[in-house]
Length: 62
Image (cartoon, rainbow, N blue to C red; front, side):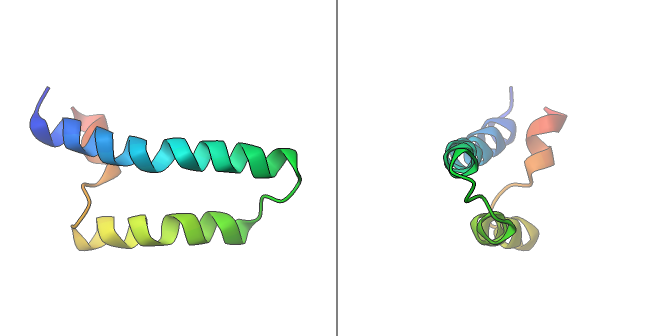
């Protein structure tokens, strides 16, 4: 398991797990909106495109 694989896995896990918990909470209260999803993922997506964060598919390649 390479260090780039572990870094990508760690970064995207730290981003995904809280999102799933928040989305599940909001979904149960019927407050989950596309705006929330867009605001949550905007910065990580832009940072991945720019190259600051590892691309999420780097964790899939192994």
